[in-house]
Length: 591
Image (cartoon, rainbow, N blue to C red; front, side, top):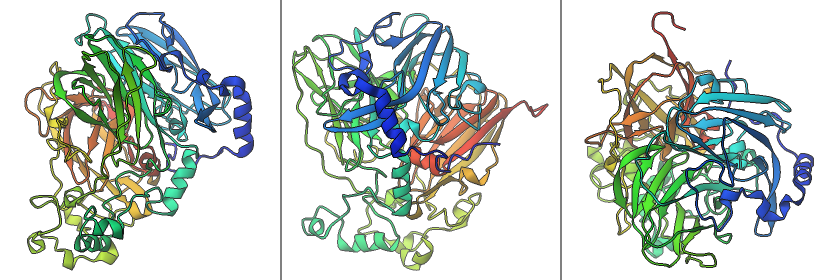
C-alpha cells in the first residue's frame, strides 16, 4: 500500500534533535566548509573529465544523508545534507556507464533519493510507497542502473519534505560521443529557496491561514496611486474569494533565495574569459519557487531543457519552474562582471550571482520589478484581453451576477464531469486556454524578449512517431482558501486508483489547470512531447509548467514498466495531495 504523502512527518524534528544536528556539524559552522568544491565562489568552471575536484564519479559512489548546521548572514539553522554539504555533491557520469550508488541514512527518520529525469528501472526511482519502501534510520540502499541518456539532471529526497531543507544536488551525464552542444567552459547553477523554519511548519501555517506568507496584498494606497486594480474589479475578486496577488505560496518575505547555496550577499562568482562560449547548466531545486532568469546586458541561447538538446533559441529572459533544468550558452565579449538574476515570479525577492573574468568583481543587483497581478485569464475565463474591466459578463455563459459566491463560484460539473466535486474543488475553469505561446506569469509586460514554450523545438526527433491511440484528461484542482490540492478533485491520501497504461502504448494527455497558480507537473521514468502550440519537432520534457487557467497537451509512450509517480513538483502542493501513480503493465498478463 502506498505511503500517505499528505500526512505530517511521523517524527518531526524537535529542539533537542536540532541541537544534536548542529553539534554533529561541529566546525562546519565555520562556514565555507558546508559548500562542495564546485559550489564555492570563484569557480573556474567544470569540464567533462573524470576525477575533477568537487565531483563524484566512477562505477560506485557512496552518499551519506545527515544533518548539518547552515548559516546565512548572522543566522544559523539546520539542513538535511548529503556528505555534509549543501547543495549535495555534484555527481558526474557518462552515457552508457553502469552505476552503483550506495545511500546510507544517518537520520532518525526515513529518507530516500530520487534521480530526477533518469530513465531507469522503477525499483530504482526512489519514491517511498510507490517504487520502494524507503531507507530507514541507520539503513543503506544500493541504487544500480545504466546511464541511458546524457544532459543536465539532479537528485533529491522524496521523503518528509527533506528536499526543502537542503537535500538536493546536481547530476550531469556526459554523452558517450561528441556533445551536440559546443562550449568552452561550463558552470552549474543550482537555484533554491531556503527557510529557517522547518518545511512542515511552513505547511501548517499555510493550512491554518490562506495567504499566510503573502505580505504584498493590494492596499487602499495602491488603489489611489493607480498601481492596483480598480475598486470594481477588487470587489469582484473578493466576491469570488480570490486574490490577484496570490502568485506564490511562500514569498521573499520568508524565503532566502540561493544560487549554489549562496544568497545575493554571498555573491557566488563564476569565472569566464571574454570571447568564450560559456554553458550554464541551470537547475531549479526550489521547494516552492518559480524564477525568472536574466543576465542584464547579455542575450542567452537556450540549448537544452530537462536534459534534452533543443534547436537553439535566443532570448533575454525565461522562466524556470520548480524541478526544471535549462541549459543556456552565453558569449560575454567584455572583461566586465555580469549579474545572473533569479527573481521569484511574484517579484517578492531575488538572488544575484556574478559571472566575471576574475575574482573580486561584483555585478550590481537590480531593483525588484513591479509586482504582477493575476487576471481573468488566470481563472480560465479570458474573453478577449484578460482584464475584468469592460467585459460583457452577460456573454460569458457563467454570469458573475448569477454565481453562488457562497459556494465558491464556477463549480459547474459539466465543465469537467470526471472531477469529484466537494470542498476540495473551489472552482472549475469554464474556458481553459492553450497558453504555450504566451509569456509566463509576471513577464507579460517586460520590454525585452521572453522565451515561450511554443518556441521550443527538439534538436532530434522523438524515436516514436506513432499517433496516440487514446486521449485522457487530468484536471489540476484545488481549494486555495483551505489549501487543498488534488488531481481530478481527489487528493492522493484518499487512496486514488493508479492511472493505467498498456506497455508501449501512445497516449495523449491533457493537463487542465483549474487553479490560479502554475503547476510544474513531473512524470517519473518517461519523457513526453509537448504538442499544443508547437510546429516542427515537438520538444520533449519530463516537467511541464501548466499556467493558471491553461490547458497543456502532451503525447508520451508508456515504455517503462512499473509504477511511477506523477505529481506537481511544488512540494507543498504534492504533500497536500496533487499526486497520482501511473502504472504501466503488459496488456496480456496485467502484470
